[in-house]
Image (cartoon, rainbow, N blue to C red):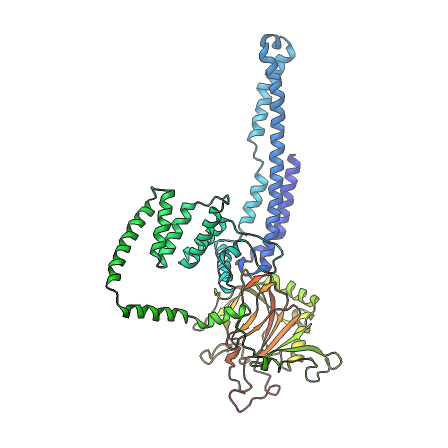
Amino acid sequence: MVTAMAFNKMWYTVALGLLLPFSYAHTDFFTSIGHMTDLINTEKDLVVSLKDYIKAEESKLEQIKKWAEKLDQLTDTATKDPEGFLGHPVNAFKLMKRLNTEWGELENLVLKDMSDGFISNMTIQRQFFPNDEDQTGAAKALLRLQDTYNLDTDTLSRGNLPGVKHKSFLTAEDCFELGKIAYTEADYYHTELWMEQALKQLDEGEVSSADKAYILDYLSYAVYQQGDLGKAMMLTKRLLELDPEHQRANGNMKYFEYIMAKEKEANKSSTDSEDQMEKETEVKKKDYLPERRKYEMLCRGEGLKMTPRRQKRLFCRYYDGNRNPRYILGPVKQEDEWDKPRIVRFLDIISDEEIETVKELAKPRLRRATISNPITGALETAHYRISKSAWLSGYESPVVSRINTRIQDLTGLDVSTAEELQVANYGVGGQYEPHFDFGRKDEPDAFKELGTGNRIATWLFYMSDVSAGGATVFPEVGASVWPKKGTAVFWYNLFPSGEGDYSTRHAACPVLVGNKWVSNKWLHERGQEFRRPCTLSELE
């Protein structure tokens, strides 16, 4: 048994050694589903290790049990006639031997720690586990998905999402945890939603370690912070019914009663002008973040602004890249996605084999996606871009080189001045909020270090299907483009004059269900002087 355990321990150490070099370099697991898949394998290894530990403990207990059963029978016989029993010299010898030697061996067996192998694995792997930031990031992703796709807490808690393969649900304790994370962010709106869901599931009889008193404590405060004093008092009374001695609840109750009395007094002297101000404030709240609302509606497939008349002017065709020799005999399928700005989609433009090669090249290099600080120019992470990305050069692989050539042939633009192919994998609720790809006039140094001018156009490959969510949307014009594996979309960011086309402001919607992989090529102005000549009109 000891030999087998030593072998298991050695085997797991070897297995861990294979995992560690890859895991060591990565953090921010929640920003990439691709990297989170490695955690599944890590957890599986730990489960196997845990089961080996359980077997070792069971084997140890089985030995102790057999020893106890044997001695139970022996001592029963001996205690009935001690002198007669010891009158047999062999019994006398064996009693001396047992008490002097064998009981000591049993003591050693009982004291033997069978958990060494498992604890060793845990200790090594724990340093590569997700941290508090990952847990908080994943929790915020659920809240973001809830808001973007108008999901009620019960739907999300029961896992009733479109396109799911492996249905899962949230326990009352999970809901409580989501509420606590929202609370620490002073997000009292979501605190209320998730604490109420936790309370509802407990009231329905769910067995949980979550404490109703704790939940009511958070809930009453969150409700109070949102201005609903009556509901806060009601929840506090319920808390005091569960725990009459709850110090904070008793103090809050007195404070709420005091505030309620003051409000009643103040209401007597309130005027119509104050009521009007409240209405104006309410109107202002409704108008808050109009782009955000448009963005979220488009993510849900609502608010599209394509009229039937304009729709009739969108076509599909076989495209040969303006008589490019490579595509005259084998043109590609192209369809219009939008008219202004013109967005076209190329179908079956990248093969599954090419996609797998690009993903394999990118995965070891994936790092948390960054944005350029408009003031300092420094690269930094941002909460509105939840993904990991990697950059691939054409010289690294014939596949990447072939893809670059394909983009050049079909767009007619020179890719020698373009940026490297960027590969991105989105995380839990992965998104990239509305942004421009090109540098605006207030960002004159946006791409200065490249020396290739502004980003004239964007080519975006979709390298996976997404079960739900994950659209590319253009809030300014009300357009939504949905991911479809093997396709690519293309649009110009600049007018031929070199002026930025502000209608190309776009966003990547949060991934609701699935795993989204994309790759993009940003083409720059230099080298395009004769390929896309400048016009005299600023907006043409």
